[in-house]
Amino acid sequence: MVRFVFIAILCVVLNANSDNVLQEKIQNILGENSYNRNIKFINKLFSNQTNFYKNGALDIYQVILTLQNNGLLQLKFKNPQEFSMVFIAETSPIFLLRTINRSLASMGYSYWTTNEASYKENIAKITISLTTEHIVDPIALLNELQKNGFVSVGILRETDNKWEYKLLVRDSKLPDSRFISKGNSISITEVVGEYWLELGSSDGRLQISTRNGKSFNPVIVFFDKDLNILEVKNLSKRSNVNINVVNNTKFIKIKDSVSSFNINSGIDVRFK
Image: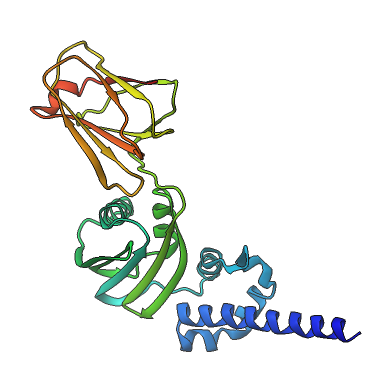
């Protein structure tokens, strides 16, 4: 009997703690005034707490999506202001910055500045700022970040003009790369004459040739999953390349050291 009473009390405590975490995050995202003004509506929207947890952790994406879809998250400033975002992730600064830049550009932003970039104990931290009439839409931003394999594990609204995103890289991706698995072949054409591959295996051998049969001056750059450079191969002029994949390679960039025009008609790649 005592054991059942203890379990019942424990469940009540855990539910109360979950509710506190959820409510505190909602208040942080909305701000105290908006939270208090809409508390009844908020309680109704979030009455089923289990919808906002995933694997025991708060699902910040669903929380913000619910607030936004129900008109509670106001993103517009009264006038253009400087808005800052801090991004923290266990990856390389170059991969995080590339992801941020690509995501913002895809959302239509054309100008922002990088105020801080640091890397300590495998954690990259980057702060950017821009002048805007709106807070950067967090849902649209998270959707873009996800295309590179990033998911949010925490969002903090430090002030109206500064948000912090803590990110996790589940499976690093480059949206402009082509995936190739071992034993397969692909043909690619890029007018810019630069090609990115994502490999399904970090061992094997690549055969690369120009689609028009003309010679080029191959530069093959091998990257790991965090876009750290593993090795660069500068080869003499030729029409095809046979090269071993460097250990721990996830991405490969192929270009011409003299002119991109030499391979902008396309390349054929076979992964053996």
